[in-house]
Length: 275
Image (cartoon, rainbow, N blue to C red; front, side, top):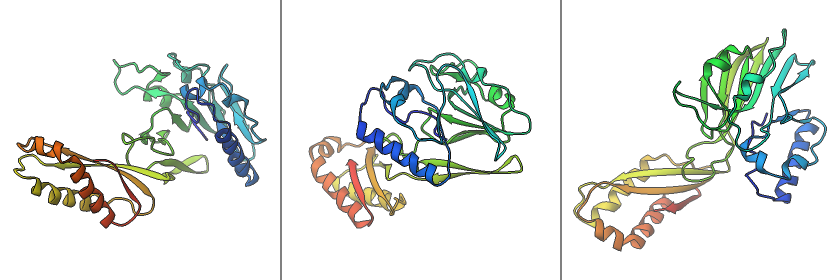
């Protein structure tokens, strides 16, 4: 299940779109059905809905919520795509009632508000509303950080498959759900990102010479437990008040070289994204 924002805005990249279609066809060949809702980013994209999806790939309508019945496994999948980028109404409230005797899944791009007095801009709703709707599992898109908002019934943001920039740090991927006798027994994160973004904070407050900076950076890098199994873009941020601020600015190139040397010594495929 793909809960939206597969394509980014007005980007018209046909090779990427066709590659996506081919990969979905591979899932179908393996006997895996695919269910997709388009989110606010996809709604802007003029060619995404025109892609030739294979049989077994269901793109939910943007006109109203609909239900796909999987009689062979006893599941009902409910979903609706965004009709436009800026959807401010609560579209989850219009989802059909649960189908009796089936495992009901709500697939939706939705922004769940954290506080009652805060109304986020995109398709806002509350955890209580989703829990009380009667579905067994809500697969949510829009938020890029994995969050389990509720369990039994489950309300889950799996996060995005790949961090897009240095603000989206840590392991990214999908959520694998195991259902036994109509109940979720496991909802595990599966790491799938090809490139990892990490930020290392180094406190240099109070240093009195540039010679003190490198040991502090080395200690921070060594304790960061950076991934060794994938390309990792590392941003090193020096923070704190020091009388050597002017020297740090003047010697930035030298310091960047020292940090790159420290990262190289860690092994793995590490790249200094910004020092």
